[in-house]
Length: 74
Image (cartoon, rainbow, N blue to C red; front, side, top):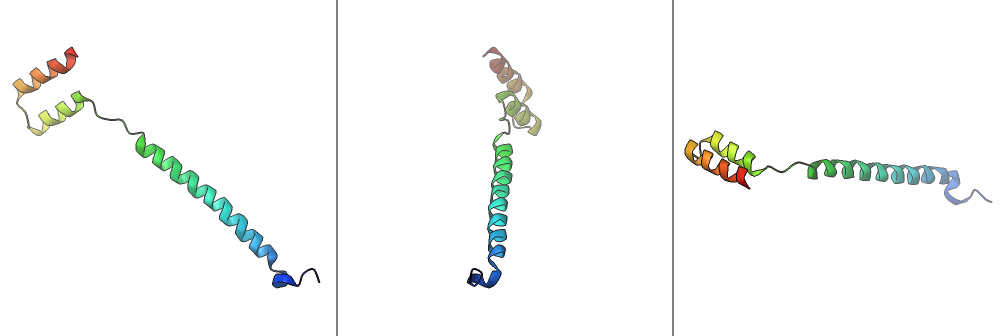
């Protein structure tokens, strides 16, 4: 009389429930860590951007030196 419901397969549902619960927490933890690493990237400083522009050839050496002195004085 006690085991008529689900024909004795109730334990399968409990295993499935716990599996889904544990895997949900695992997925949440993994996505939380990966997003934290993405947002933890350092931002470029003004001097880094200036060096990149000079390396690409966007600005001349005289302008590079002038802007670099301005940045250093601040």
